[in-house]
Amino acid sequence: MQESILKNKSYDFAILIVKSYKTISSEKKEFTLSRQLLKSGTSIGANIREAEFAQSNKDFINKMSIALKEANETEYWLLLLKDTNYINHDIFTKLVNINKELIKMLVSTINTMKSKNH
View 1 (cartoon, rainbow, N blue to C red):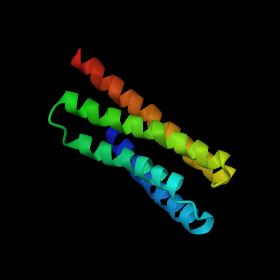
View 2: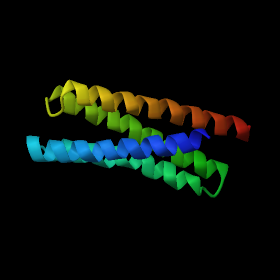
View 3: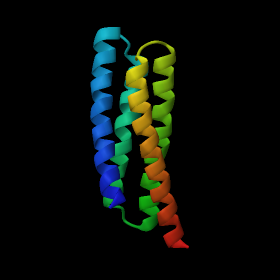
């Protein structure tokens, strides 16, 4: 059940990231940091989708761990974009809160799978 929620939430988050990227690149003419955000922010959901067809529990945990790393990286780019005034506080807060939810869900999923393996 949680995996489905995680899959949907990460996809919706990716859409928000794409829209934010479009806004930052068109309105602020910033392409480097926003591209990094685009890559890491959309990679979260892509790795979660890859985990759906994992070949083993170990492979599943690995894909989810990569998604977790991408979520952590996404938070970094969001902070940097906020602190350099490329995104406003409201957009930052919305995105970072969703990202933190994803991180919590990923950690929970990974820990649950790890406990099943032991």
